[in-house]
Every structure is written in structure tokens, then in C-alpha cells.
Length: 149
Image (tube, rainbow, N blue to C red):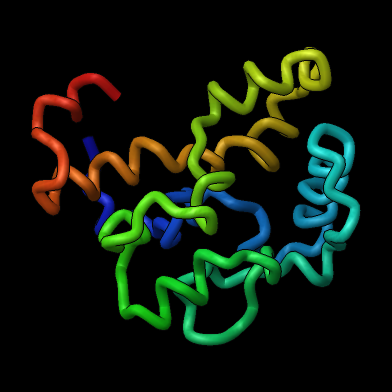
């Protein structure tokens, strides 16, 4: 398994390095926003306001400006929400998911999703393996669980 530190992982465990919001290509971001609207019902995002440097970036150029996990983790100086003594909390509960869980839960809406739409709007929401890996790294879970995720 690739170590978390080798990839751009958000505080919540999302795979920021896979997210089209980080692209400089406004057309690519628009395709992602269109897919989010179509499959997830997200109406507030536009190709302009979703431009993102990843939640661990230096500035405030982030896709989800309503995220409560990011400012909390930054205020506490944490690399990952999984390191917090209050983890999991209300700020994190809705962010903890897997791509397969999302697809299963939204199967009626996503039965016709294209591979391009999947790559643009779903694949980055696979936080649980990253959070579990961080919990194992910190000794909060036994190492054998890595073989189960």
C-alpha cells in the first residue's frame, strides 16, 4: 500500500491528488461540477469557485469552503483528522466514506455514470483507507487491519 505521505491526502482522508478541482483547466473543472450536480445534487459549485490547491495548500483556494474539518485540523496543527483525540467527530462523520460505499448508496442515480464522470467526481472520495492507514501508523489500530481494507 502506498504511504499517505507519498500522496496529497486531505485532513479528512480524501484523495486530493485525484480531484479535478486542482486542475488549471476550467473546462475540466466544469465537467466535474456538472457531474457533481447530476449525480450528487451539488448546486453551489461552479468551475470558478471550485478551483482548489488541496486543503493542505498554503492559501484559501479550496473547493469546499463550508468544510468544518479543515479549519479544525489546521487550528489544532494536525496532519490528519485521524490524529485528533476527538476523532471521529461531527465535523468528520459525513466525510468518512469509500468510493464503493458512495456508488452503492447512490446506485439508482449512478447506474449510468460514465468512466469520465466517475474519474472526475467520485474517485477522490475514498477517505476510509487513508484514515485507517493513518490510525495504524499512529498505533491507534493494529497493523493487520491494513490487509483488510
